[in-house]
Length: 335
Image (cartoon, rainbow, N blue to C red; front, side, top):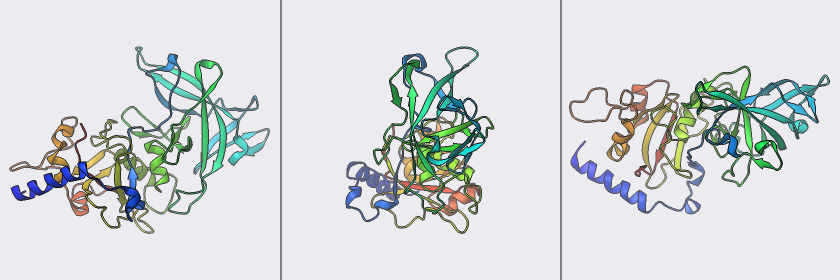
C-alpha cells in the first residue's frame, strides 16, 4: 500500500469520525443498521443473579394460568405449546410463565440457577420482514425479580422504543457460538444482535437461501463487531453500519446498494468472526484487535504471508468461500 493511499485513508477516517452525516438527511438511510454490544439482550435484574449469564429458556416447566404446558417448541418465529389436548399459539400464550437457566460462574464447578419469566404481551410482527415470510411474533417478557413482586421488563428498548423479543431455536454459549439444543431456546431481544439479525431478514428457519442458521450466526458476529469470534464485542451501541449479503437466489436478502457517504468497506464475516479486515480498519485499531486472536487475523505488510486483509468481496471469498455477510462502516477507533 502506497504512502499516498495510507494518508488518504487516514484522512478520510478522521473525517468520518468527526463529521458523520445525519442519517435522517440521507437518501441511503434504509441501508444502515446499528451495531451493539448485546447478544441476546435479556436484562438480568436483582441482586442474587448479578454477574450471572443467561443460557436459555427451558421448554420444560412452562405454565399458563397455573396449569402445565406440554410440547413447548418453536415453529419458525413463534412459541407453540399444548394444554388439555389443545394447541396454543400466537397470542394464546399471553400470561404464560417460563423458566430460564442462568450460569453462575463464580462457583466451582459453575452452577445453574433458575429464574422465572412471564409473557406480558404478544403481538404479530408487522414489519422488518424483507423476505415476506411472516410467522413471527413479538413477546414482551417480564422477569420475577428476587422471586417477589413487582415484575420487571426483560428487554431494553429497541430502535423503535419497543421492549420485545423473538423466539429462536438454539442457544448461545459464552463465546457467542450458536449451539443446537433440544431442551433450551433463545428469546432474542430486538435490541440485541440475535433479534436484530432476525429482523434484518436472516431468519434461522428460512429455506431457499442456503444455510440460514449459519448466516444468522455470522450476522450476530458482525452486529457486535466480534472480529475474533470469541464473544468479545468491539463496537458501541448505536454504531451505524451498512450490511449486505451474497446469499444464493432468491437472495440477496440485504442488497449492497450504494455506499453511504464516508463509509468504507470494513470486513467479511462467517460464523467464526471476521474472515478478514480492510486496509482502512487495519490502519487504525486492527493490530490491537488481532492481539486477541493472533492465529485468526494477520496484519498486512511486506513479507507477511496469509495476511487477512480484504477490500472487496472477491478478496473475502478468496479467503473463506463460506463468508456470507459484509459491512461498511465509519472506520473510527474503537478503543
